[in-house]
Amino acid sequence: MSDVLDLTCDLIGRASVTPDDAGCQALIAARLETAGFACERLRYGAVDNLWATHGSGGPVLVLLGHTDVVPPGPREAWKSDPFAPEVRDGVLYGRGAADMKSGVAAFVVAAERFVAAHPDHPGTVALLLTSDEEGDAIDGVRRVAATFRERGQRIDWCITGEPSSKQRLGDLLRVGRRGSLSATLTVRGVQGHVAYPEKASNPVHRALPALAELVSRRWDDGYESFPPTSLQISDVHAGTGANNVIPGELQVQFNLRYNPHWNAERLQAEIAALFDRHGLDHDVRWHRSGEPFHTPEGPLRAAARAVLTDFTGTPPEESTGGGTSDARFIAPLGAHCIELGPVNASIHKVDEHVRVADLQALPGLYLALIERLLPQE
Image (cartoon, rainbow, N blue to C red; front, side, top):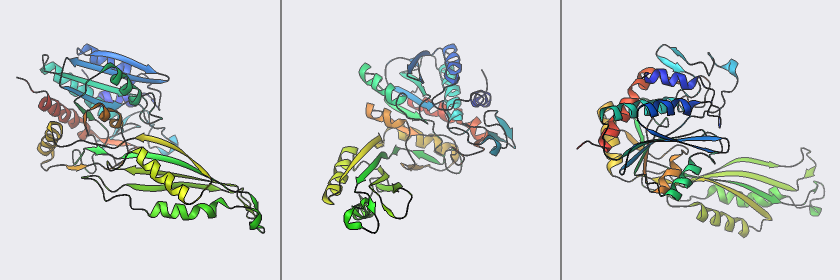
């Protein structure tokens, strides 16, 4: 049974740029089957998903992760090959070192240690891995969750191994995530010569008052540990490139990160009413990445808080910040979800890395959590 560092290096060495798993899950499944896990491969389209379980009945504790990574960018910008893991001065470098092949490897090692020490443990411990977290997230955990819903698969608790820590391992515990709703607004006008504005209709001019109202609105004052809902315009495009042409169309892209005060349908209705009130000739194309979720006080948060306090000496910050994760698809199944993983300072960057000491400590943290949640009689 290889050390967590060896397994992480094996995974980094596989160029699993989303949605290509590049054999990561086959390697993990072979290990887990040797440890006594039942492994089910769920392939949808070009996406590999692995569902590995040990034990039976409830409670059901799921360790959730992904084997895909983002592209490395220019290879010459890296100090070493992004898919040839290298340890320098106590730090492991490579694409996926932090996000999240270290978390996946630590899950595997923790699960192996748990079932070796407690072969007749109560309930079910499971790993769910996908190769579609960094991409479209359509045929990954989203699709698996739909399958689970059809089957009536129970999930009580879910631990996601995303890199959540800020300065040192265990200083932050994520207990929820905001929802994410994106939109592409198209405003139609009439193209014409700038010297004859009466013969044209400028969609930029028509849209500006509506956009000003949209970005100045205070949506709410936050929700428990969630920050206030935020709307950000990410792209504005109009015109032909010529300075003497009134454009015939304006496109604006924007995104809302919202707390549980809202759901996507209510936000869409509010924004549609605003555009209608301004009399815009428009349409909006919406994409909901996921609804917000929040894990209340209970066994999962209490266990995680206790484990991290023991490890770091101080209680962790409990946060709902950051982007999204695949836990957004598991929470609607009725599961309580937390996120706990390595330091996230280098994720998606050139020379992504994780401290070897943190990596070697991570399986112990996950094992302590599992043992608190599935205690022996």
